[in-house]
Image (tube, rainbow, N blue to C red; front, side):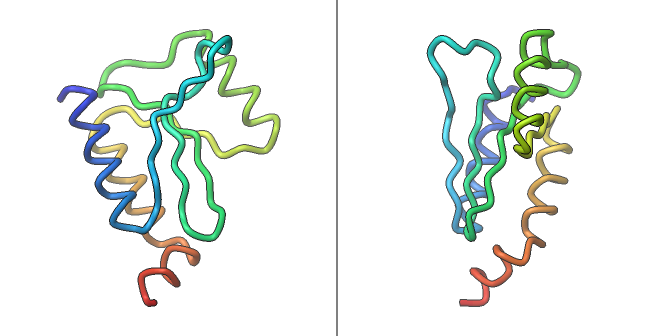
Amino acid sequence: MLEKNIEKHLNDNVKKLGGRCYKFTSPGNAGVPDRLVLLPGGVIYFVELKTKYKKPRPLQKSQIRKLEMLGQDVRVLCGLDDVKEFVDEITRLPEVLCRKDS
C-alpha cells in the first residue's frame, strides 16, 4: 500500500475523533517525524509514517530519540495495520472518549 493511502487513513480517522493530523516539516531539521497528531485534551503525538517494510533512516532515528528525551510521544507506524492499531489506541483515550460523548 502506498504511503499516501496510509496517510489518508490516519488523517481521516484522527479527524473523526475531533483531532487534527498535520503534515509536519521543520526547515533545517531533516529527519523529524512527518506527522503531528493533535487530539482533544492537549494530547500530541509525533508520527513517522512508513510503508509496511520500510524502517526509519539513521537520521530519523536520531531525531526520534531527541524528541523522546524531551518527553514527547513519538510513534513509527509501518503500514496500514500499525495505523489501525494506533487509531484503536487513541480512540480509547479518556480525552477522546469524553469528546465523543459530548
